[in-house]
Length: 217
Image (cartoon, rainbow, N blue to C red; front, top):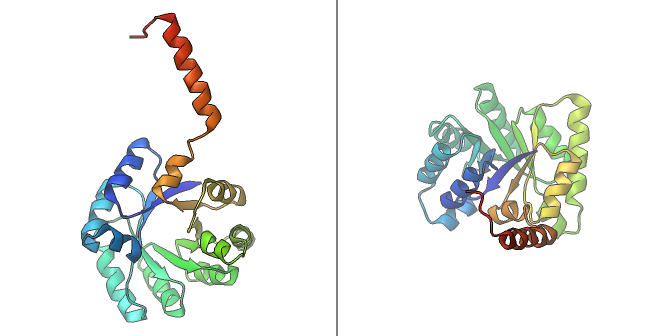
């Protein structure tokens, strides 16, 4: 499963990229607003830093506006992916960009039927929102499983990009369910390496090595 980081904080992206853990980045208007920086400037900086796909979301909700904004964003860098809402106009725009060879990420997906429409529109990625469904006491992971089954049934090439991930368990469950990608907050990605027994074992090794009085170098 590929890991995208869900943030617009360049320093956090650079840190994870240095660990070799990143396959791409997703941003949205809310994340850009939190950064307090110019939208296009941030996207350009991230694209220069990361080789993989970088999702940049349009602000318009109408087809013509989505196309105009998306084509402008696509010029920033070759690895820009145009992020579109899962509406009829968004699907129409998705088809437009797919025909032009521009990658798309159809976002705000909350049902298997929506995901089916996105795949038929040629979306590169579909972003089902797990955490927001869980907030409503709906099993978000069941949605991943349903989309995986539908896409496998018909050979759709659209990649399942699990979004709204809140915890390490979400990441694990997405991997088990067959999501192609998970877009994850920086703290959750780093937290995947943590385990109390790892810390305990390492502390014991360090203590035992110090007792030998030796040095490797």
